[in-house]
Each structure stands twice: as C-alpha cells, then as structure tokens.
Length: 240
Ligand SMILES: [Zn+2]
Image 1: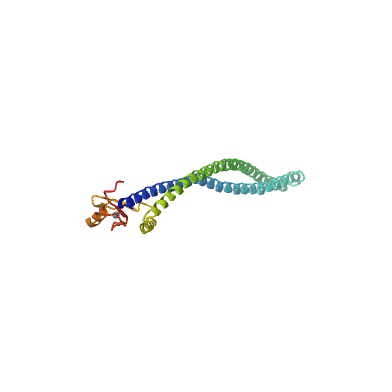
Image 2: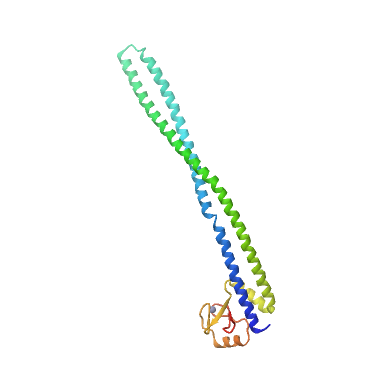
C-alpha cells in the first residue's frame, strides 16, 4: 500500500464516521418527537384522576346533606301537625320556634344541594373534555410513534451501510495499522479521530507539531499522533 493511500483511506473513514454520527443524531431527534404529546397526556390523565375523586366527594356531600334535608322536611311536617294540637300559648311559641329553625336549616340545605349539583355538572363536563383529549391524542401518539419507527429504520439502514464500508476500509489497511486505528476510533467514540496538519499545527487543537514529525509524515505516512489531543495527524500534502 502506498504511503498516501493509507492516509486517504483514513480520511474516507472519518468522513463515513461523520455521516454515521449525523444519522445517529437524527435517530435521537426522532425519538424526542412523541415526548411533548406524551407529557400532555400524562398531565391530562393526572387531572382526570383528580376530577374523578372530586366528583365522588361532591356526590358524598350531596347524599349526606340530602339525608339531613329529608329528615328536616319530615320533622317540619310533624311540627306542623303538632302545631294544630297544642293547647297553651307557651307550647305554641316553642313549636313555632322549632318550625323557624327547621325552615332555616331546610333553606340552607336546599341551596347547598343546588350548588353541589352545579359543581358536579361542571366536573362532569371537564371529565368529558379530558377523556376526549386522551382518546384523540392516543391515535396521534400512535401515528407519531409509527412514523418515528419507520424513519429510524431508514436511518439505521444508512448507518449499517456506512459501518460496513468502514469495516471494509479498515480490513484493507495493513493489519497493525487497522487495529491501531480501530482502537483510536473507540477512544474518540467515532468523533473525528483524525486531525489535518495546518501550517505546522494540529488542525483540531492548534498545537504546534514538531517539524521532525511533519517531515517524517510527508516522506512516509504512518500513524503519528498529536502530542496534545492524541488524534492521528494527516500531512498537508494529502488532499482532503
Ligand atoms: Zn491536536
């Protein structure tokens, strides 16, 4: 293998790695797509549970107060009957007092019953809205998740192709160089393991590279590392 041929291969690998990382980022972006609708659905579900509890509590209050209302109404009927049977002024005035107390209580309970029915109706309307959002958004969520699955399958196909090409190129390198470069790729997590020399400096970290290294590289390409960022250096005379 010619000196500069290996360098060309490494450059091609780096460009494939860039493409792979582009498609991996797309996969991550796609996976975020259902998040906002999922969050909205979670909040709605939570509120729906609260509304169920509130309805149950309003119903319980309504029933308790209704029992009291029925009892007071019956008591009032009895007092009205008794009123006709009393013989003394004192008894009449006591019964009339009881009747006024019962009438007061009945009127408060009737007002409460009306308010309870009103708030129950409001809660039931909210319950309907929340449920219909959950039903409607379930369909959209499933559609989005299906789209994401399809889109990511395509992204993964691209990645698989590029990875196979990287493997192919690595196997065409001299074995020791291939092995060394592969471990460098792992070290950099496939993110720019190469650096191009520029005016005697590392193109990635701008560290000044010793002239001897640069001259040796230009004569014959081998894996030489930037002493600062540890990337493999590609000499300036290799076009890229
Ligand atoms: Zn460097």
